[in-house]
Length: 201
Image (cartoon, rainbow, N blue to C red; front, side, top):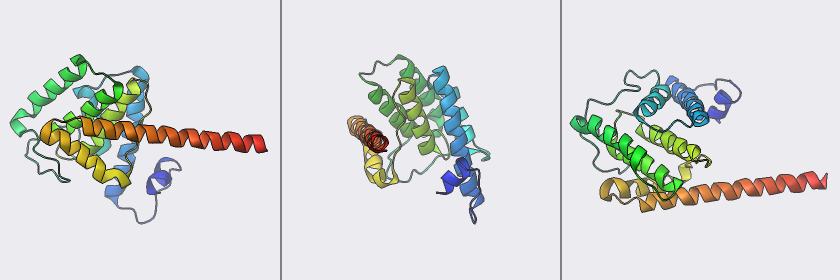
C-alpha cells in the first residue's frame, strides 16, 4: 500500500521511515530503468547490473560497487564468492550470459538469478538486483516480468538454495515457470471477467 501511494499517486504515507521511503523509491526507479533497457534490448552485463543496483540502493555509499568485505547471507543461502574472487566470478558470469546456450528463456532467467545470488557481489541488495536482472532477461526474450509474492518466499529461498549449495538449477527453474504460469492464468481470468462485464452492459 505504501509503495502504491508513493509510486502511483506520488503521496508520501504518514509515519514512513526514511529507509522505507528510499527503498520504495529506489526500487521504482530501478524498475523504470529496467524498462528502458528492455526497450533497447540491452543484455544483462556488469554495467547493467551495477547501474540497477546503484539506482535501487541510492543513497547508500556502496550502491553500484562490488563489496570489499565478506558477508553472512541470511535466509539459508549457502557459501557465496569470497571477496578476492568477486571480480573474476562476475566476469565469468557475464561471459556465460553471452555465450551459454539455454534451452528456454525461463532457464536463462533462472540461471541469471541464481548464479548472481551465488556470487553475491554487493554488500546489500543482492536479492533485489537478482530479481531485476532476472526480469530483464525475461523481458528481453519477450516474456512478461514475474512478481515473487512474499507468500512464496520459503519456496523461493529453498529453490535458490538448491542452486547455491548443489548447482541444481531445476528447482528454481520449475518455481519460476510455475509462478509465471499462475500469473498468466490470473491475468487471463481477469480479462475474461472484464469481457463478460462489458458484454453484460
